[in-house]
Image (cartoon, rainbow, N blue to C red):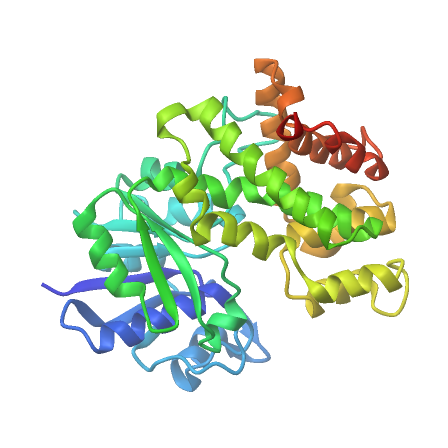
Length: 382
């Protein structure tokens, strides 16, 4: 029986994944030829975005210039989509996930499964701290929809995937039969998939790397070279491994996972951006480029860019989030705060100087200029 595939989210990455799935479905008897894309409806001029996708076969707002297959169909009814789909692929900003899950709850098919491409953690409300450790978005999907949820993570920039530039991703899925099925759905000659059975380890790498990327942004703004950033990446790599082993034991991340695209590949991708390094060296944030142009013209990770902007402008974190991300909470500082709380409760702050320093700087308790000083006596050097 053919599986019905639905992509929940129509941003740039959602459009890329829709293209991949639709092309694979078109040449397969395993999946229904029609792949549906849930669109949060908006007007582009006087036209609905869903109508534009279905008539011009292009997401003109989020992935302009990339033709989508004609069997990729935009829809706007969440409940109807949930009742139709056998595989729900979540690719949307994390702040919209609770609302989307509420719209799907009670409207899913028996035996359906989910796949999350969302990098981040569930923070709940600001006045309600998260439990010990990190609450993952897949747990939110599982608890709301009552279905298994795999994870697809990697060092992937949507514009490059759209151009079919070679890249790789890691699929975390505990069921080997389902993992093989999902690999057939996602893999192409230019988008290569590796499988890890431990779903948790793939997702946690995607979350914790945001802290390291924020630290890399501090390095860029302060004028440190590639040697320093390479050291920050390596120390961050080791702290991620140490943190997960400390809090999650045998269920945590192995070095094998960290060497996958979801681990080291994603860390490097998030931390390096040649264009941003040049910008940081020649602008103070108030010149012609401005903060919004920094976001729109540079292709690197947002955590790295915002870490750089904090130093360049001296503005508070929440102000920069409002200016650069339309008020969306950035993952690096948010996760760093939760990690700091957990480490403080366990009396482990001294073993994680990089993660601790990122939190203290983001919360205004440490000057960015002191960042490297905190790393000179890192436990990895002892």
